[in-house]
Length: 64
Image 1 (cartoon, helix red, strand yellow):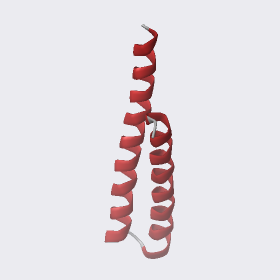
Image 2 (cartoon, one colour; image 1 turned 90 degrees about the vertical axis):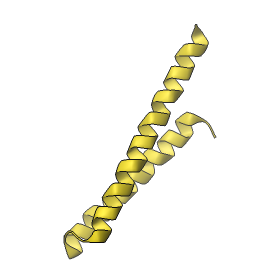
Image 3 (cartoon, one colour; image 1 turned 45 degrees about the vertical axis):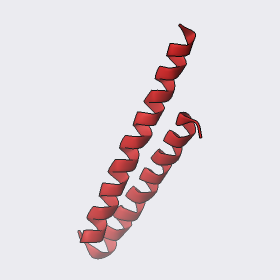
């Protein structure tokens, strides 16, 4: 899979985990599960942005 596609998927998963975490906090407060969802969202956003950046670096390197 290409880095741009993988990065977008990771960012979408991060958004989904963030949505579930907000729902969890609204229903039950700050529990272990809410912290775990936020942790997963953070990892997914970080990986997604890193892959998107990699895509643009590779693209600019190929132009040279």
